[in-house]
Image (tube, rainbow, N blue to C red; front, side):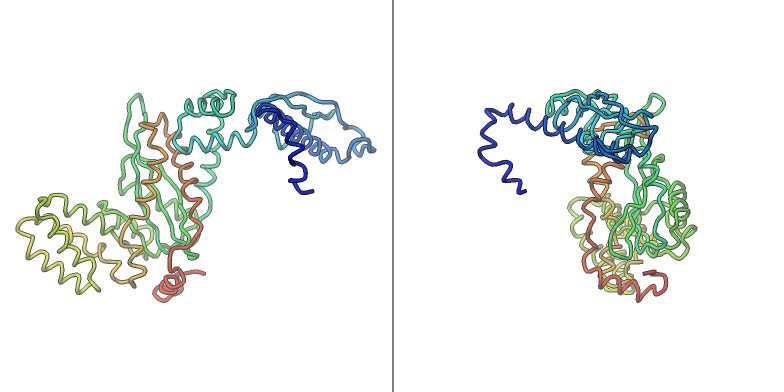
Length: 399
């Protein structure tokens, strides 16, 4: 039957005001839940009402009542019982007082940076019933098991590119607020899709902690990373090569530009930046090296530290020049993961500090879930880029 035949004009005329219609919807929702519970009981016992029992020892045993809170409001329902008390309803599980819809709403609001008290107030305003902050905490704590499962899931054996960076949060520890870092790694798979490989909580970003991150990736099944892209954290490249010796380690050129221009006086910054651009936009390494020599000749007397930083990091800064233009565009900078960090900040901006390590992990995990819902398409020109990877790396790209 067409739904328009049921909800026709004559049918809707019976409702005199919005309260009448709201009461009807509540009754309809309640009836629907109770009907589904009856269906679950029939499936549990193996026979419908007024039919011969299959299990001679078990049968229906009346009803119990239960108050639940749903998107439609708070109301009481009848829950069928069996003699053996073995019936475990799925739609409204035992000991549950919130419908799945409300739980999902709580988790979604928490993911968007709302505090427990804010969520409590929002539910009261929107749905007219109270859910305590402690109940909200219990609901959000349920995702802890999801985090553990996600963090320990098996990974692909090969990632074409892995971007790595850390984001710092303030967390309470021993009655003090300290800085802690969430370490993030994003991998590019051979289907062109991006995947957050995990998050790890540690002290402020350090190369030694990245060793444990890379080791964890290896334990979870990663055998090879063709290219890594990181900032210029001291010792990072050596650690990558210790765990994945075949990997090409590219240092972020954008980080290098920022660091090099940090102490340049304002009136010379435009010219300085323009001359530096000729280095990283060069067509090949030879041309880039010549541009660096010209850059040194012009600026070394004023900004030797900036010039020296290019020479110190030259090999890692110019890895991208060994590749075709299409691959260069995706590996010369950590902007991809920095953009991810920026979006995480938007979700967590209401949290000036987190009460526990677990609280910050919950917030970042839920933010990642929201952000990566949109990661459904391969990166642009993927067919061409994949063929370039296959040509360059041959058997290391496992299709």
